[in-house]
Length: 136
Image (cartoon, rainbow, N blue to C red; front, side, top):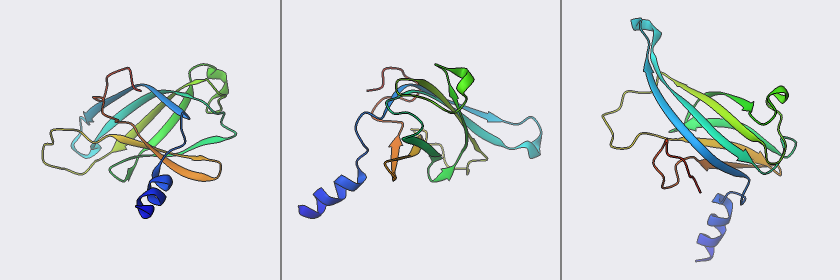
């Protein structure tokens, strides 16, 4: 029991640092055979800490790194910098995902971020269908 409590304390994310507003997923296939395929993700969220304390470091889908950009929707002139309460849009691209048999559920992104010098992971899907608003 003690081991479970210790492990769960390491795996928990800090409360209320990120609130997901909406997340979308769009698969694409290039028009030229060599251009590949991919999945575009857009994640709209509100941060409860500024960029000086909360830093996004990765977006992964099933352990594959995505390239990503952060846009501050509240203050677009600030680029990737943000303050507490700002709304951000994270655009991520997973290029050439591995071929897998058709799955009932699609893979979802996980946001990696650093807060107080610790790395945390925030899975986007938390019991709500991907693409649906009203995340907890």
